[in-house]
Image (cartoon, rainbow, N blue to C red; front, side, top):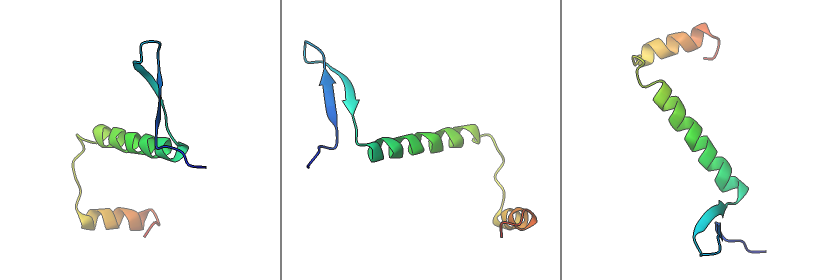
Length: 63
């Protein structure tokens, strides 16, 4: 079975009112949206250097 990447639902006048996406495409869009929200939340944080990041990861047992 072949499916299109997306399908649109239209009203009586032919105006697009909704879209149907494959679940993988939807999940990717949701993951991208989450990533953008995290970036926006952390925008005001002070960056740290690589050495500090390694130190924190070692302290937490992740490196």
